[in-house]
Length: 355
Length: 255
Ligand SMILES: Nc1ncnc2c1ncn2[C@@H]1O[C@H](COP(=O)(O)OP(=O)(O)OP(=O)(O)O)[C@@H](O)[C@H]1O
Ligand SMILES: [Mg+2]
Image (tube, protein in one colour):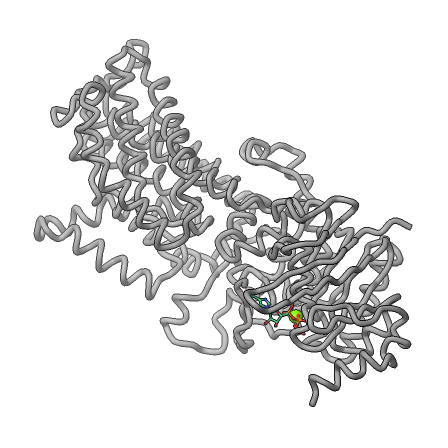
């Protein structure tokens, strides 16, 4: 009826110390609590990161800004998708569809002469509504079935874009003017960078708040034991639909930024591979972790580029191999590795509050 | 005295099997009622009908006067129904503390907007809840394991964690399914005291399924006996234990 937790007691210590031996594989699989740095260290590293990120576009050539902006775009997708898949346990292979809707929302709004920030807002709202409408029936499904439905969504996206010719201009695509408004003394790449930074920062904070506390616990309860969650008072269907819609909105905003960055959208940008890379992102970064979205985004931006310099066909293979490796050996992803590596250091830092 | 729980003539069948064959039962505020019977008698099934996991084919289950048959499950928790599971319903990936905190979901507020805006009220509620959960863990002798993932702990400890999770939501009606299973002797006595306190001090209504007769006779005000889904006896724990029909039911399965 419900999942149980009746594995026999192990003799090793509480999840964080490496006592009682164990193989490397076991060490990699061990769950670890998030790093809990003392306040001063948290503030210092946040301020440091913020300062660095603010300076980056001012001192770098535009192609660097472009790739860092892409990392932020993927981060936004990952933050939302991890809420749905990592915390909520609902698989989606279809988020390239919402990314596409966001991108086209910006393109169409741009054609209609809307200001870019307003267009980005639309890029979040429309996928939210569409995600909600799709989620209402789809989230009655579980596991494999949900995976298949969302997979179909991703596969149908390029064809659907072509079919909505009057709005999307079919295969010709839509050119977008990504230049900043007249009052902004920035180049195109810098402007989109800052828009992405603002959206990613906001997304990061919102995700962190949702993922902890009362709501975060309800997501995890839905994932780990749905019936038990209901007996605890969680409206599981509503929770799942809201998670789905929210993650769709994240993907949509990211898609909108992507469109502004490339200044063009066409059906071929939004194929199944994109969805697969989103899933790879959250698995590699670390399911059910917030910083994992950043680490996974860095991975999907840089690693396939590296491998495709060896062979253009290598990207798909890289994703495949890496997905398998992480699923089997590093279930907590890069974020889990970061916790393992930094945990002992952070615990030695003075000023840490007693847990 | 108002009955917090009123079960009336509940019928539940699985295919040809009549799991519940019309038992009726009430539990009032501050009362601890034992629900006993041989294996397969329908005790857990009755719990499942009360908190909505099963839907009886006929009969009525009222909590605080509200019929629960048509209510969505999550609303039943909202009426103040807490529950522990016979075979555990813990969140396997989470720590003991997180599991206990999850038990307060229906008893706390803090929706999506309040959480996204990180309103002071949300923080205060969370702080208070954490303090309360740690208090409960200390009371139930679980403070040492608060940070441990539940997957690594023995069964008896997990049963107590489930009880802590049910208690943190301050249930008006508490359904406990074989809580003494896996506990050692001294822990059973403590468990009895905890349940008794909950009923006497907080006025909670408790329905206790238990095979440990010592615990049943020491904490229950009344006992109801199920056999093949039917209520075959009800009354004072000691008298019921001597009832020939009850003795026969138990011997019947023991033979
Ligand atoms: N979901 C189900 N599907 C089919 N049969 C079920 C289901 N749940 C319970 N039953 C049957 O209903 C009867 C009552 O089971 P129930 O679990 O309520 O007994 P119980 O009194 O709790 O027993 P125990 O003391 O062993 O826990 C049993 O015959 C059981 O096999
Ligand atoms: Mg049972």
